[in-house]
Each structure stands twice: as structure tokens, then as C-alpha cells.
Figure 1 (cartoon, rainbow over the protein chains, first blue to last red):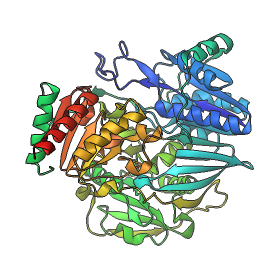
Figure 2 (cartoon, each protein chain N blue to C red):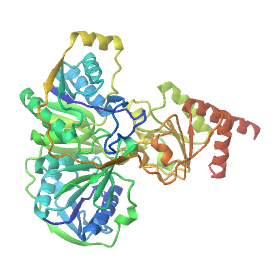
Figure 3 (spheres, each protein chain N blue to C red):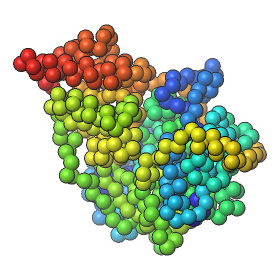
Figure 4 (cartoon, each protein chain N blue to C red):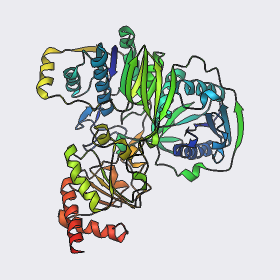
Length: 253
Length: 320
């Protein structure tokens, strides 16, 4: 199995996000980036398939702060090849990422491309289905289980209400991963440090920025809230007593 | 070229999904801007009865056995033909497990711009909800034809409902050589408790540090005569079964009390709990979007609050 895993870094939502002075983009000055969690699941799914079937896993990411850590962590988990897209990567949207990755994929001739089903900052669609179409491959997203047999992938797709569906997909294919068969493994930092010494990151310049298909934002803002929660303050014990009162007032207890 | 708005309606196993009505409501607002028409596109088999309360000017129905169930490949081909024929102003898909499988692919195939996570329209601008509900991004809807994927939260279901519109039968293109095929559905496990029927849910999210800590949450739930439910991260970790998942790929709930512990309130989660009578949220992040839909909020470590609440409840039970 030759598997390619496109990943990207996204703003960490645990941190406070702010808008830059231009008013139409996020302020990146203090922004902390983390690996898109669905991409983490895509890496795990790729490693699981490699462990079962043999083969090679290539992880590709646009350059961003802390992306090297994410790539070396993938190597520590079992990824064989690490590729970083360099150049004007700060404003890359999904269309531009897909456009930049297509040539690499064409030389690799993969059996499978696994990527996170979405990222929370996607504004112009998802990389997975964009890639699939550019490569004339089939795509299925919201996948939470993958088996490979005889040039076919058997995948579990999620629907609302806990309903699942099993689909047969001809390979090569692109799958948008919602969750890997097993939760992403933990790797100790010593193993990541080891990977930093043994693995290397290939850098690939993306050349001119691809502008087609993107979306222009004229204004970004924090959501305007109609009625925000009434905040209860004080010591934990006082708050607990107040909350129990509220529950009683609402006939819950 | 037309100014019409296409809505790619969504249904599953004979039921219209709520997002369909939300998309129709959004499309109606957009169409009123330009005096154009809303066309609901239905792909299915013997599915016309589903359209009886669509707020649309007409229905374009592609009805054949091979469209009975959703398949990304088949939908791509049919909707591609529909867009080429209609040349609409906008095509609205759900930002869902169905719509997201085809919208981006069509954007690449037809070289049309795509705006995702659109929550509502402001005049002829889109307003998208990104970064887990923490940021809104507004801009002009790209011309001449924009593809859109839509999230819930901006429109009421009722506004997407209306009297049965005229149905036009359309001929689907050839659906030979599909590379994706449905084998079968796997129905949800019904052996566990049905959290859609519980009147008190104690919901935990990413704030839970370890699987062992679930005991603390269960203790609180039992003090409230409720059950434990979860947001996505904990189900992905395997700490709780999918039957406990509230959200987009889980279930929608409507308890008397939804106590959200360490849940940030990502849109995928929030859309499934708006039917709750009372929502109380505990989170260390004062900016967590969950506080935008909760009636009461506490900025505090969930562990501290779980302990205080459990003690208070047990103390009261003791007195009683």
C-alpha cells in the first residue's frame, strides 16, 4: 500500500482568537497552531493500514509554525516520508493546497489518499474531495473505518443519528477521515526526538500562489450573541448551591 | 444564466433531514434579494412524497432506483448536469456528511467557487461560521455561480416549509461505472440507554482528562437521576460508546436539563442540543461558544464543579 496523507495546521481553539487590524483575517501574531484533529486520525488510519498490509506512508503539509513537530511526530508513529510545502503558504486555502499537492501525488501513484474530513477554518471546501476530483479518483468522507481487500476499500461512513453505512470504493481513492479505526496513538517525546535525528523533511516550493476557487472575506468578527448565559460567580460550593436551586426552579430536581 | 437558487435537498432512509428546511429558508431569503426562484433538487427513488412541505418554487426530481441511497459518485454526476442546465446564481448543499461529499468535488469539476460553513446570508453576502463557532467571516457571494455548504443555526425550520410546489420530473444522466457503491446500512446499537429519552443529561467533552474520571461524572449524573452523554472527542477516544454521542453524527437530544462539562460548544455539537429546556455550562474558557446557548454558565475547572455539585446533591439527599 502506498498511502499519502495531506495534513495541515489550524488555530488552536482553546486559545483566544482575535481579528487583525485589517478586520478581514485572523490575527496570527499570537495564534497557536495545532495539527487539525481529523488529520491526526488520518495519519493514524494510514499507519494502521501500513501495519496490516505493509507499504509506505507519505505525510504532506504546508509550512506553518510548529508543522515540523507534527511531521516528526508522524514519523515517530511510523510515517516513512515527510514533505513540507514551502513558499507563500500563509494564505493557502483548500483549493490552493489541493492544487499544490496534485503534482506530488501524480509522481507517487498512491493506492490511497487519507486526509481529515474537514478543518474548522476551511472556508472554500475540503482538500480531500478537491484532490479526488483533480486526480479523477472517487471520494467518500465522514469515514470512521477502513479495510482494504483486492483493490477495493470497504469503508464505514457516518450519517446523522448514529446510523452508519458500509461502502465499497474502487482504489485508488481519496477518503475523508472522521475517526480512525483506533484512537490516534500516543508517542513519547523521546521517540519524536529520535525521529528528528533520523527522519528528514523534504521541502517543496509551491511556486506561484494558486488563486482560483478561493473565497474573499471582507469582514471577520466574533459572533454577536443574542442572549448570553447568566454567569454565576463565587466559590465552588456557593455556585453548586445556586445551580441546584436553579435546577429546582426549573423542575429538574 | 439565471438568478435562481438551487437547493440540493437531503434525505435518509425515507426521512427529510432538518438541514433541508434550513437550506430552503436561506435560499428563499437570497432569492428575494433578486426576485428569482428557489428550485429544490431531489435525488431519490419513489421519494416524491418527501417534498410535500418544501418552501420552493419548484422541485426538480431525479427519480430512479440507482438513486435510492446516497452515493457521492452518482450525486456528482446528476448535480453536475443540473448545474450545467440551470446555470444558477447559487447552489446550496448541506455542510453535512452528504453535501460535503459532493460540493468540493463539483467546485473542482466545474471550476466554480465554493463557500463553506455558511450560517446565513446578509443581503447578497455570505456569513460563514468558522473556527468552531468562534469566528464569523463575511464576504460577497462569488459570481456568477457560487457553490455553498450550509450549517444550521441561521434559520428556523418553519421558514423552509410551505405548500407543495410543482414537481418537474428530470431525466438523470447515465449512472454506469460508479466507483463507490453502498453495501448496506448499519443501524445504531439500541442495547444501551436511549439518551434522546432522558430528562437529565450530564455531558462531558474534551475537558475530561482520563477515562477513569468518568466515575466522577457518573456519580454526578446519578445524583441528578440522569445519564452521561458526550461530545465527539471522548467517543473517538473510545471512552464512551457512540450511543452516548450528542452531535452531528450522533443524536439530537431534548432533555429538561443539559449540564455541559468541559464542552466548548462546537457547532457540530450545539446543533443537536438546542431542544433542551435548560442548559447549564461549566468551562474554563470564558469565550467558549457553549456560553452563547446556555442559560447559565460558570467559568471554572469542571472537576472542581463536579465535586461541589455532587457533594451538594448528596448533602441534600441526606437531609431529605
